[in-house]
Length: 480
Image (cartoon, rainbow, N blue to C red; front, top):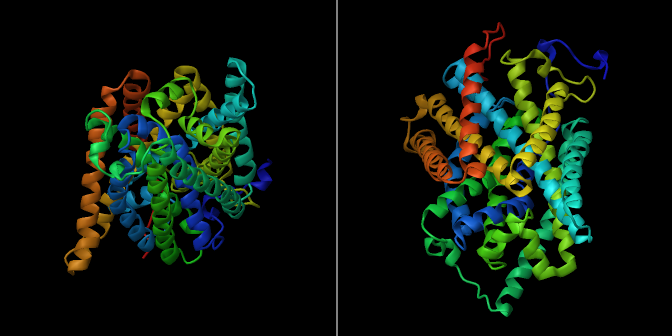
């Protein structure tokens, strides 16, 4: 692409405004949350960690997420910006802290993007197996083909603009929801006929496999399931009536997703036993495909196809979120100015998107070579959750600091601007310590300790870049 097609002056770099409405913004949030991929990708790890108490892990994760969702809604209403958490942290504390949080948010969205080509590689391998292709060549070849496909097709959509991105994501979303409902409904209807009665034990700690540490290991993945509603805040500058619609879209996507996913996880707990599904996972396949094959036979290929569909939709929205964060940081002089370059026609962060898609391919291949296919998915999932929880902690802190002058005006404001963000800080901090630095550190190196080491190193490097960042003449001013 020639330089003539790219705008060059940072002062003129503005995302195309008034492009999407409530449905479009909420769609991005739901697609990022991804009902299908949460069920398909996260049911296995949560079920293996906590057994039939997997629905309880997701319910606790929802309760821990709600305060942060309120903080996002309030901040999006008062301070709409594509920089979201990074800009809010800057206005609430200092510029260098804001830059650090900007890198943390970028790592959150970028690592979430890397999950998608890994997942598509897994599903494509399962699809080839279902089509009677066997052997390591088919499995490994399917993985690498899936990685490339998951980066190329979403790139073709995302590079063409935010409007095309939301429409493309909506098509994928509708297809996956239909199949997920059908699968969960089949399990609920057939399981009792196979001698597995339906109970509500999954919503109590009595269903935990082993000891209570299992529920904390499961919550690492359950929290990832609820990570993504915040992507709505990154399109504030491209949304009509952002101060009103962004908060509405935030809660709309979260509530719709929560009901759908908790019921779905509960249904799937009646579809298999942990010991068998563990063997499936260790063989490099998704446990959900084994459940689907058990209930649908050859029709289980639909689950694989919706898994592919869901990863493509997620790749779209995670690329949108990550590129907008990198664009916002570059626009304020926090990173290389080339990332603040927009395409003159499509008005998308052109160079930032290059980094996302190329990095996704490299990250997927390296992790596959290091830990294998399924463990690669688990590795990136836990990694992304760490950066998400750190982001959420500082968003709650920003909500508390930016609205501190309103806390004691009334009881309702004390609850909204005081109690809720403080509770969010405590919940996020506790989960970071308990689930990562205690439970995850106790796990094997490949999918446990290495994640903690990688996350901490990245956070330290991000802090170093923030401290070395130069002051810029362009001031970041909070909207009035």
